Image 1 (tube, rainbow over the protein chains, first blue to last red):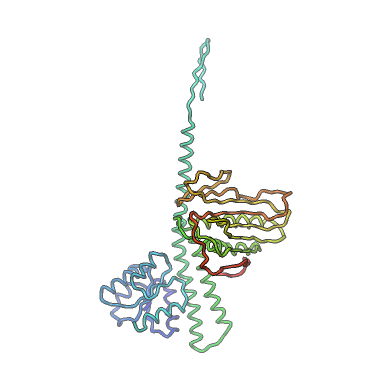
Image 2 (cartoon, one colour; image 1 turned 90 degrees about the vertical axis):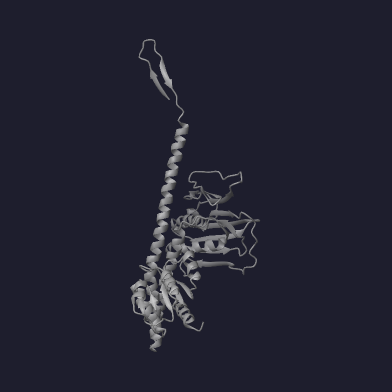
Length: 116
Length: 299
């Protein structure tokens, strides 16, 4: 599952992860993701930190509170120490600053999906 | 002082004298404070603008990089071998990454990070500024000769301020060269240890003899408790932040000296490390005398 409010990047990520052999579903906001009838627990979330409404961190906290422990790869175009620290505290599998390298993203997703 | 003569036949006058020195000083001071405040607000706005601009620009850049890299993978997955297309896509991704790096550096320079930091590596600060100016230098056909002493003590100070000082020195040197029609177009930047706790950054520009002027700038960090302060001349820009007093003396346009002996115009900046930090002997030698011309990519 990929959640990013930039639709252009969302399409690009779908192509990239698709080419990497993953099953991909994309959402342009946290609300969009929450509104969908449960599509089955995703193996991994690629989650933008800054979304239109609910932020990536807030969405992640809600999921954790609801008992869903989904490994997350955070991505952000707004990289600073505070954001990085928060991602680390949230237990992110990977934290990537946009624009990121495809190798890093795919390695991160593989790690998230891999045996814990 | 005002004089009010009496309109009487026997003359006389009232002479009043008011010392307005203090008032003038107060007015000057308040003007200066207003100017500082206005500047601070501009810098803050610029910093905020820079942050949101970086965010806005990095989004499409991320899409470009990801699309290019996805296309490379899609070609590979479908077994399509087309070296030129793959190379074009690789270049596309690399250039978008490069644009992002430029935005990041620009943002770092405009950020309102004036806090003093310890353990700054001057070599890294200088290298960052050189990279920042690379395209401008390449456009003026100027080569940078970078010599870095691998063992320089770490210094304390505001990293952005230090970079701005180095930036000023480099821009001055490049402007001086830019006005010269021909001859060697080189700027030498040296960082070297000059005695215990004293690191020197020296910027020299090499031009043809006749165009040579002298540009000299001294930058000193004088700790506040030190009694001796650098003499101020016109064009001084004393900045006082983070506990260290910086004075940027001279270093404006190079003064023309037609009979100057043949030597390089020179701008020297010295940075004194507040405490004798341990020398960085643990680091592998970073660079001997190395050269990277302004035109080459180095990110």
